[in-house]
Length: 556
Image 1 (cartoon, rainbow, N blue to C red):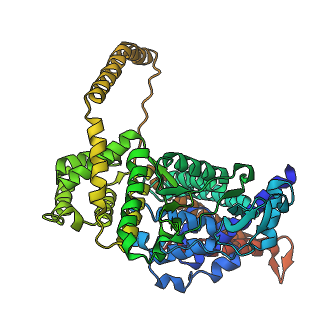
Image 2 (cartoon, rainbow, N blue to C red):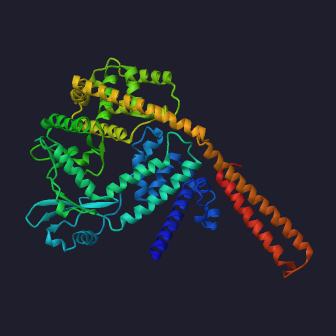
Image 3 (cartoon, helix red, strand yellow):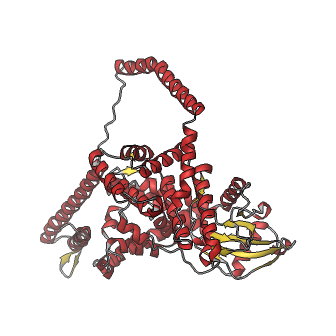
């Protein structure tokens, strides 16, 4: 246990050092001071890389992308997640983060077999007749190989890279520490919360590391589409599936972007749209990454979905809000559209409703007079997310993932059939949700529920008031005041105080050393007291460090 802690500490120090050097290299040296990373940068490199690098010529968005790419798979995946949050991040950064690629060299085949046999506790030939040495796909966490079971069944095996869990765990712990520092020292509490972002990312990537989660998702999709003859979901082989290994039925098909049969394109565009609208609006459980590579067409023209590592879920209430929002936009009902958007999100500051209404009118006016067929879904959703960012409306991550999935699906079906109208297909699903919500039984049930909640609150009111008065009577009532932005001010004062303290120490060393030099006492070197010379040297080093930190901060 002791040596394990030492090893973990060493990995953390080594990784912190790498992060600090990459930040300096790409012109973010000022963050070293903000995040207390100076201790991980050797003095020689602090001075040597004082000018950062030529990367300062690039825009900040490009440099951020370069930093994430150089820091490796975990940071690349974080950047990819952030690229789906136009409600939090300006468009110019989104455009750069979307360029991040999860590309790494394939794992050697002998390592693949080693991982498989380690998971099965037996030789792979006990279950498999053969495993193809060439991967079908390779990513930072794992790779996929085609195989044949002993009974002749064709399957695909997803195998996790060896030791990837410990590497990601180290990065997540460091990200969490850095996010806390950034929240306390850089970001004013409000729309962007680095700690919340890292926590959400941590949950997502830990799920991705456990292939049993993906297997459960695939099984749930299979159950949801059990009655749909034209949709195929691969079967999971649970006896050959573990935390680090996933075995599924091999589906013979071509990727949707390779489709050449012109007469089938309209049919398939409608099939794809209806399947995803069912996932989103009926099941509340949808594929989070429906790009062309994850959509296959079988020889008998069935739709097959693969890769269920990223999924989204929405409860009935949120699905109804989304449906109401779309109907309000279609009907150009600005008041209702704004109300539904605000109910979907969390308001992080006072909103200028008049300005928000004006921007909504501009959004709707740009589509005035157009039929549903002429309206593209992707631009509308992008503009909605830009409005959310502008007015600091923090939308749930499920809605962001929903928007991204819808935009991807629209792009896919438009490419195979440019005349296809996804909104026309969506309208019956949306109206069905609204119709169900307005059923008399549902309205009566909701009314009774609201009355019940009100009665419970009224019954509890006397007791709660009594408790408050009791606290006041006993002088135990505490009121917490929350100061927006005060943490940032305190951190700046800490930096200023530390610099003043160092300046005073330097001054004291210089004065003290000068008095010792005049006293001519103690051991000497070249005729000068050694203690006095040492004081000058320490004062010089501290002075250089102070000057470097001030220059790096960019405030001089």
